[in-house]
Image (cartoon, rainbow, N blue to C red; front, side, top):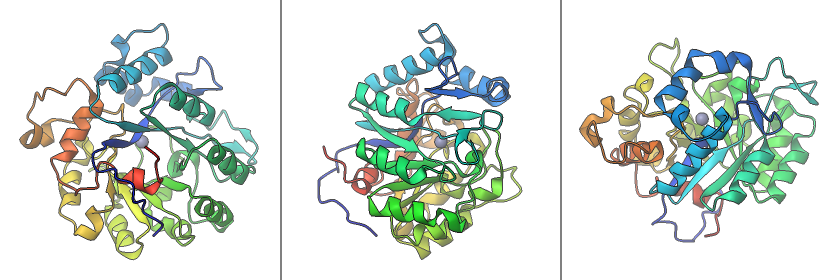
Length: 327
Ligand SMILES: [Zn+2]
């Protein structure tokens, strides 16, 4: 396990996993494919989160305005905001046919300049020919977190050709975040890529790795990768997990199950919401009630639900230690 900074983060509250979406008015910033725009999940998300009623002429503007409004009122000190890299043709050009969800690194780096509360997490598909150069570029821009969306970006993380990328990330102090567990909100290349057991090659390079969603799947999925996540946590002390999307209805008992794990596991769990995907209040009503006062702000609602499960004293700020964040 790498460093852990002596700086005192104990009073800070951080959401380590949030998203911004771009509808596609300016594809350089980001876009959703036609198919994703029209999907039931997208429509449901816009409806449930109330984004449609937000100020703004375009859907992208509404999403943006909602994010910045929630940032104003949240009790959080910081959020980690994710970019989302594309699928590439021969590792060089964006494959617009196969890319269903894209948010550019430059857009997220720009948003981080507009708010002191935003910590950028860029995204690099390691199949890109310039993937290592892009690691250096984002690191030079001050970014220490990089997300790989295994299922959507078509990345099977165990491939030998990614080793140099993982080694370089570890060398320059970048924490890699991998999507784990079945993906439901967007078209995928393969769900098999989301198995936490496929993270060995990255973990063996010695850098810190975060398994987003702790390998959890929905109750109807034919597999559940959560047991594999726990196995890997016992095997590697440079592995961490985040709780993004785990307060949702489709992962009914996920928060409680995780809280019952040994301290060696729970002490490496990082708070994340998956904002703007809303958490569900009903399964957690015993902890937060059905109408908590903070329910209008999805960041705060998710934080308070998960806080009730007591993952340990570092849960809300551990991510700052991982990246050696300077206050
Ligand atoms: Zn997410």
